[in-house]
Length: 389
Length: 205
Image (cartoon, rainbow over all chains, first blue to last red; front, side):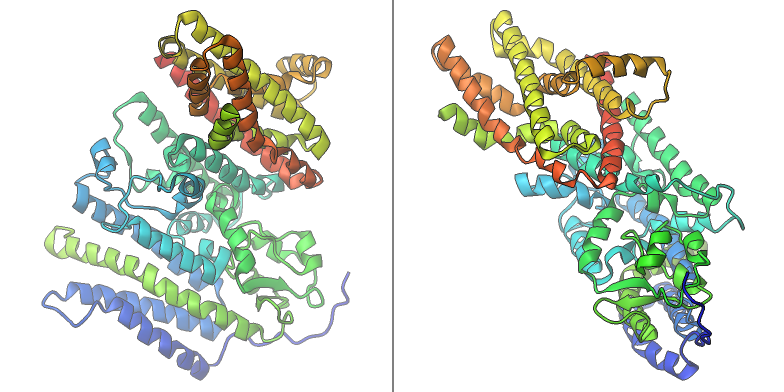
């Protein structure tokens, strides 16, 4: 047991002036991303862009000023997931006229590429030099090349932080996990945290054999809210039932009952890949064992089960840590902080946090901001003209 | 030599076809490198048995093409369902509660003949008629004599088996209990896929 030192908890956050100064570059960059060029006749795109710009910058300011990361990140993250569904549906309906996927759509490559496919395409790409996904390489909504570059850049930047800052599905189970005040299922067997690695191994091996994206064909819960094959056979009906069951179970019900992000922590195969990529990322989250009082509030509050008692001893989170900031905000003794690898733990924690938030937020503004803005525009058009386009 | 080189050139496909069952199985077993090597030899022996059965069926039907076409869906369906069953037995035999009838029988059988699992899995994997196998038969059929065909086929088989050599080295990590848990889960996922795919082939075929 560590001796409890009488340390005055430091005042969280930066002052107003410092927060505003740090906000200025973000305001400028996000304006460039979202303004969409000079104002045009139709004011709606500009309005959507400005609303998004305001929301992003207010939330970023609050993150800096209050020193709290998780609650404001959560708002953005859930908004990203919800607006993606709107943007995706609008785009697919505009391109194909239906959310249901037909064989003709697949042959013509009218299927947007999703980064969840990435683990399954690696081995076939190495051996056959083809992408085993029926999408378009350069054209259309979410073409393969741009999604791969986006993902690679984001992964280098944030590592496993992708799962709490940039993944446009994670906000769904995060949102549902916040509905109930207290968990109904209080503990989860830690062995289930190895299931994502098993799903990764299984889909990679099966995709290498079948030369088709096994995760998309059989296990993706998000097919229930985006697109899936038109039900023209018993096989497709069974696959659809699997998708809906996984969505309802892993994304809606279990997060509500456990108040954890069960899809992200216990199933998604991209998570382990991001965890491996995180090894070369400069940011992580560390615990100062000298300040830690072993209250275990962080363990109880971590949405992805990335802390355990061994973490408190070693001062390191598990490799599944998504840098969401929940434990940093929850710790009553400020013993947990964002950290730059190679530096001393606890020293310049604010600087490490800002250095992590800055590029992450810029990436979010560019990538997620456009999705949010696009969804707002779609809703505005629907309300004002009765049509989404 | 020609058969061996052809096997080397195409063995990665053989490995890809067998890996979904093999890798989770080895991970779950958590044995050392030497024990894994022995298990691998049993697996490859079973695989050779599967290939020979297909060869016999094809020879009995008169030609590989006409013979295999009729048997293919049935054989692959049986192989998938059988593999799924063996994988589930391999994983659940240690976890099933005492007294669970089906697993008591399996446990008793496996304790008498422990080689049954890897040999059985190899045999069923061999029934899956992967593309390299078709190449092997084509090459063997053009050998001109029965002895030549057998030598060609054996050399091809040895060439493809080279790719399996790294798998026993999973035993280096045998102390990592996490690997065993991952292997267990992965084996169940793969088994469910094989069970479903096999059932479709058997019902639709």
